[in-house]
Structure formats: structure tokens, C-alpha cells
Length: 189
Image (cartoon, rainbow, N blue to C red; front, top):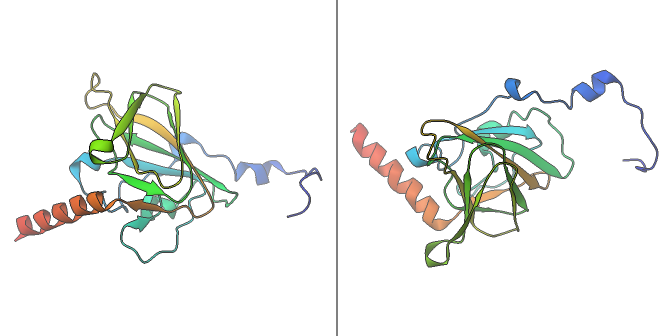
């Protein structure tokens, strides 16, 4: 890219390719190892970025999953990614970590952000516009805890660094996914 100090002029048409209207976003509720689990049901919206990462490991995926990472509203690679999660109370992903920073901003409702696993687990609850920023490699999860509004979906924004960020579910999370998959397969028989 040329020197950033050289001011560029853009047409309205060029800039409109970088506008995402919330009501027109296409979300996905699949494409992640924990997507089928009842406690993990959520819809993820890839707004900016999210190029699919390159990995053969089943536990490694795009932070928004394969489905949503293929349809960002603004498909750019400029060092960060932005998306939303919409979920009902009690719902959120299993424990995972990223190869880059991840920042959460509660937009509506109350969201619990947990980190570490087992007896080391900690958490903080976020109200609208509160922010938490997780460093690289720290296992984390989030969940809508707006229990006084049962059945109502709430919105959490996430910003993830990098051009092709990777998420990896923890071994405990993958064991939960595999156990659920085996149980579902037995029910089909």
C-alpha cells in the first residue's frame, strides 16, 4: 500500500462496500464443533473480515465458524475482525482460545465472560457497553446471563485481531462435543 500520509479520495460507491446494515446481516448458527450442543446455540454474524484460517485440526476453526466466515458483510483483511453473537439466556460457546486478542462489548443484556477451566475458572459479568479484552492463548467463553428476560435474545459484539484469526476449543470442550455427537448417533439407531 502507498504511504498512508497521502490522502485518498473515495467515491460513495467505494465507501458503500464498507457499510454493513445490521438488519441485513446474515448470521450462522453452525460451522463450529460446539454448534449442535443445546447449551451452545447462538447465531454469529461476521461483519468485518474473518477469512477462514488454514488448519487441518478439527479443534481449530474460524472464531465465527466455517459458515459465517464465508459471508462477512465487509470482506476486508486489514488486521482486525468484528462480529456479533446473538443468544438467549444460558447460551454461549464452550471454552476456547485464540491466536490473537479478542475483545467483547456487551451491546444488550448481561453477558458472563469466563476464563480458565476447572478450579482456576474466573468470570466477570458485562452490562451494556462494558468491555473485556482477552490476551492471546487465554481460554475463554461467554454466555448470555440475562435470566430475568427468559427467551429474549441479546447481542454481544466481538473484535478479534489479525487477518485470519484462529480459534481452538480446549480439550475439555472437544470431549463435550464428541460425547454429544456419540449420544446423538446412538439416538438415531
